[in-house]
Image (cartoon, rainbow, N blue to C red; front, side, top):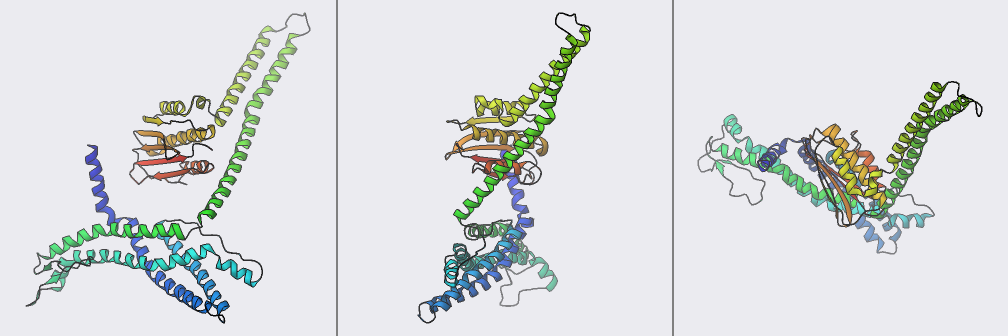
Length: 445
């Protein structure tokens, strides 16, 4: 039954592919990228050729180096245009490399610009982009030929395209280069064969486009973002700032909770005990109002009990006591308390460090809470194991999907939490579900 449902869902996905926003955005990216790629390729290549030619001569060496510097700066500019297209049409967000700020005298600045790694990566992308963009325009021919062939019956009826003597009839256009053997329509009924070929071409067009755009996505991530070292430094700076802010917020919350909760209870406890002491009177004297004294002691006992409860809740927010027995038992407790049935599977040959266990526990708790509140799921699968030296926590549900970072689901806080230990958060949640969230953490913080 499940295989049948999965097959039907895949078939619906194939049939809907030409009408999705993603397909049209990728086609628009292919259309808009070629002119930019052509202009950038010509300008950067000409400047590099002039620079290289002048540099080999002693007379024009300085001028040649200036041409090379201008080429790298122009490569950065065109890279910025391609990043904008990738963000606007593909949703591919790549952080721009830091601006180059050379200092010192002229030759020192010239040397800094010549050593601009981000500029040279931008030049490489601009030069590689043109052949990629040409192939992307080829992907557009699948859309065009599909629409043309699909309209064959309408064109025959509207324009009366009849085969002339000695001619084969209305040709069926194909985007495949080796398509010389495509059928020709010699009658109105025959045009429906061309229409069927057009429909099949249109159904294939989004997948052809997506495959070619995937190559461009990889190039954008590899060449147009900051270098691996620069990205690593930026991530460390961000995670350090997040850790500091998180610690400061935790201390403020603890201070507020202690001031507004436990401290008030302890003050009331002290006052009740002080009043009870006054009711006792001098040593050896009988108690004047035993009932009043009993009420004061009961009040003091209540305040002490509530203060202990609040202190216990505060300590549980810092480090859940259920983790004392290990992460598997803690997750089993979470699963047992969930109002949505949870299938739990934990396989941890080695116990992670306490910091990693705490992060994994809070991530699981937040993800299960999101499932209960937002997904409408009827079943959840929670799996924890170790793969490739990483602790992986996966939460999968059969809900309505649509979960994204920043949509008020708490995923933004989880992303910040896992990044403090160089962890990652991967989300797969198409509209209609299912949703799968994977948290990857190092075993040691």
